[in-house]
Image 1 (cartoon, rainbow over the protein chains, first blue to last red):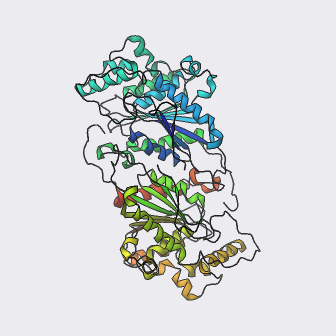
Image 2 (image 1 turned 90 degrees about the vertical axis):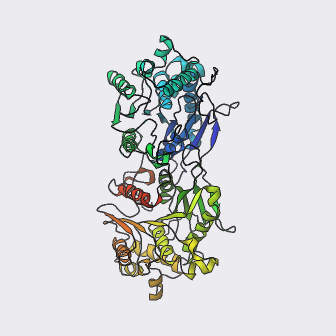
Length: 311
Length: 311
């Protein structure tokens, strides 16, 4: 395995791609290319959670796919900072839309550029995001074919299309977020998150609309696998059902799994990604094997069908 | 993840420990130590199979355990050579018993020496082996407390004890191997394997006895998880049932799973470790989640029981 951290922009330390590249062997895929999974951790656009990074990458690498963790543009950069109540935070430009989703585009280009060296099949790159990272992946999934992406990079849009997208406890609709009843803590968190992504705490209708991927699903949207927990008190499960509706209305292939229990931010929902035991739920943990089966339908490795002597 | 190849002996290229060390994070285990799994691939003591190396390490790393692949002393060293029929092979010293199991001891010492740096709990190191690698792990498991190991290293034996052992399609009894009806190909393979491990092709009773871990199980033998397939035509499943009997007779905690179908050498039995589709069997692949549950009983990470704000 080659695990290294690559800067996406030479002059910035905060936006990085961490590789988990499976070693090529004559005894397994023998140099053929493999699909890749690009993972966007959550963190309210304030930070990128380690809990939704390496543990997830290892799990997908164990399925036989190259994995990459993208630390995209977030308010606090690569510092681990918990927002403090009562502090007045200033606007910062680097994490404002569309920068975070352009980081995904940049990562897609980086993977494509290194496809030969890394033995990646660039036509088979999936995105996997959690919470705000799932929002970022969903935004990218509905905007990859628009000038916001391709005109910025001045490249024909085909290279940007993800082959499949996996979204855990996503935010899909900023109107829903605006109208949500919030505790004081939640209000502070979302106000700061809005400042990070939109540059302001209170969003106008045009911005609410633009930041709501459920409102922009089209026939260009890639197949999606959604999962969430019905008891999520931070991001209501309706974000997931609205996205499912939008996908159904556009005939986009999708799968959705809503587990009865489990709080926000479960990641793999087992010990490998947990800080405390409240982040483990064995039912919700089944999302991973469901996602594995779903991926297998499109990403199965190209293995010889019959017995090969000596292997 | 830190994945690097470490030579176990400065003057040899063939015996190596490949690390898969999970990155420490304040957001997961916060610098606390983790259990480790030391993996011995199979290959008839002729080579070490890549199919039973990195894919297995990634799967255990995805459970939250540090993983290590040991390439121990085998006849062909680190070259990938398929034995050729009709060739007369010469005796080579480096892979002769007890050298391969002493490599495990050396690896255990290496892990212990680096325990602080790698955040490993040295009292929680498990072995996991396949085929000849499972034989090597089983040999080590019954001999770790004997002078063959501790006198060679001149260290008190306690540091060598594995906490748990996982064995896939193992060889446990060289009498059984001797008396097995073999095809011409199988005979050539086992003759060469005997040359590799014993220095001769035909073994005397003393050697047959010494190389049969099922005959040396004692109250010092660590808990074991055994799995195999009833249709294995290369290493009959009786090697596994004999080992299970021996463990039962000595009251060693163990678990054994024999799947109805599946040939020899399935490794993870899914696409991540397969060269061809005959190496995939979805039933046999369940050994991994059974082993995960079994390990969890002894290796569960030490997580905070209750909600920790901000994680």
